[in-house]
Length: 375
Image (cartoon, rainbow, N blue to C red; front, side, top):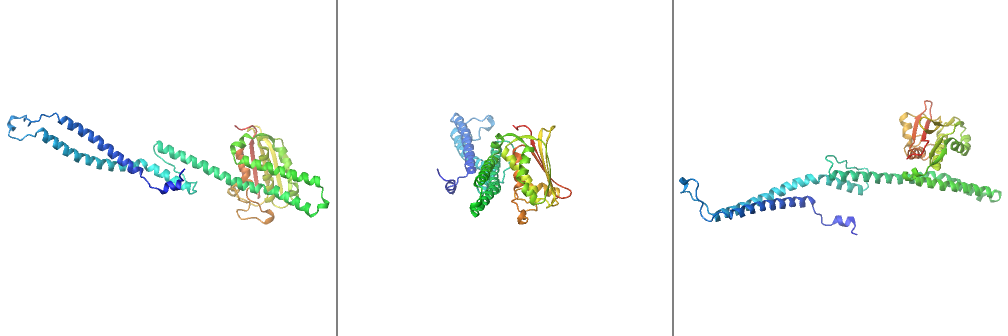
């Protein structure tokens, strides 16, 4: 197969020039057929001077057939030259008008090949073949750009989320290496096994998250109240370290979704509330079901920095931390992917995420997940 670059570097042929020449040749050929028909008809003119219709004009010289045919041939040559000029000129203009959308498509292809995946043709006008081709190309760019963004998000989310279990594993191994004689090795192996299993499950979940179609097929009934109770138990030490008072109202809330992804959603919400909450403040967690809407709801609220509504809504952007894109102090520093991953998980499950600023500071984050499998 010849590389695209090698083919592009070769001799370039203009489609506009070929079309213009084709129009000219077609017009000349059509004119030649007509003039040839006239010539054939005139061959049947009698080969003697024609008689004048008015006898008073008998002194006027009348042409013979040979003279008429000679005049026709000369006139035909001039006419064919004019037809060639008119055909080429008109064909050049018409070809340029017809091929104008193709130039825009070619420009979009060139820019996409250079990495500008955000460029779109947005061709307007009649819904002809060129517009259908441009729309199909725009749709292809949308899919390519979405796939590329998904891969970037997957890499960022994977590196962020896998950091915790890997750090726990490293800590356990360092402690065991420092004090090899004072270790409960069966318990250590159990903790390492649990952490490794959690990392594997999280990797599988992130892989499914990279493909929304695959995630939509992995559904099971999950009780948000029970799930949140487990997550609170796993993060109770962090709550105590920050001196936060926990207010939990965990009612049964059955939803359908990926259990690992929903666990990650609950963990991220609680850890964000702990990390960005005011030391000595509170964290409020509420789960329940909305019967009318047929969905399970999860609310996580804390007190902390004061945000505007616009600032609160922007916190779902990747890498945007609670204090903006400038890193917080080291003990509170995050990677700015917690709420971004939560937003993606909610979207995958066909749910709704609302992030609002509290009047006294802090955030109020509510999540609603359908209580029945989505199509």
